[in-house]
Picture 1 (tube, rainbow, N blue to C red):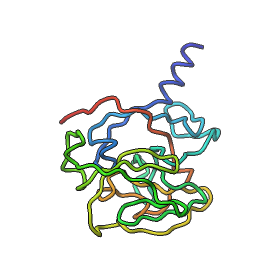
Picture 2 (spheres, rainbow, N blue to C red):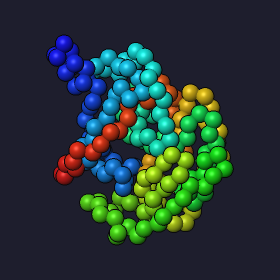
Picture 3 (cartoon, one colour):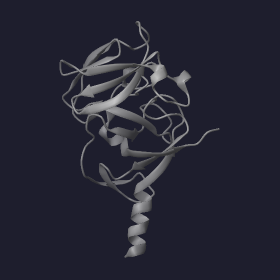
Picture 4 (tube, one colour):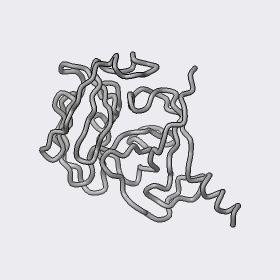
Length: 195
């Protein structure tokens, strides 16, 4: 019984190395993170095979997912900002959910400790509201997808963003993420593996 429990635990909690800057300042390149593959679905250990749905992602969750039209073996970390039924819009990188503008406390980039400040936008802000509270990075001015939507999230789909708003491939580019393409939830960062 102890061996079976150990196998289930080891097969459920996995470590991943963050490969890019799309979730900075929350997650930095070369961060080693732990993900719970059974946060939303009971899975067969050491696989992505889902047996039973346990729950659904909530706004603010950092998830691991497959991106539409990308290599099936590639897994991405993204933040859920829109759940089924939500209307999502961005104006100058500020998020509006169901007509409510989230709260923003803006910091200078120099005030945030990070090993790779070049990956970040000009400003850092605490984005808070609608069940979320985390840091984001963005540039001033009308760049890229700073203005987007509104878009309504249909049943069985989610809208995801990177916390590094102007340096992220996310739902603004590839569209909604299907619930079936979500394979776990970020739990914690262990360390940063410097190159």
